Length: 116
Image (cartoon, rainbow, N blue to C red; front, side, top):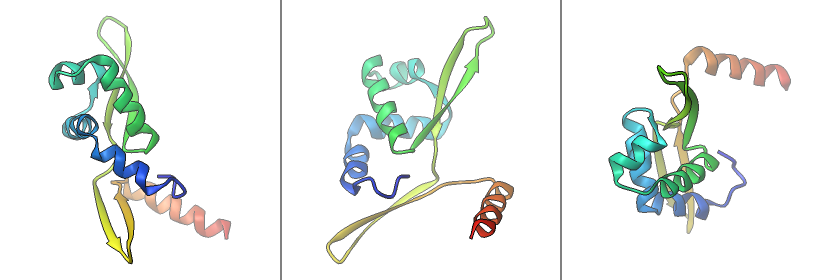
């Protein structure tokens, strides 16, 4: 997540009921916007707006899937494991914990050490 992004934007995003519903649904399993629309009984434009906001805050990610008939579509999934919101010295702090592949995390750590 972009550390320079105002915390209020993240809190507003997770404070939105439809965004939370979309996030909860894709946390269970990857889903297309159409599946989310049907499952949550939300209009497709509403789902797409929430997905766009969630992607901006790196809370969901998408990947292209190919149907049996050859059509391509995106499926969305949660991009984090948990979130902690703390109030300390009259200031909110948000920490987003992501599940990463251990070898990928080690490679990133190694790259970071070599850059210094």
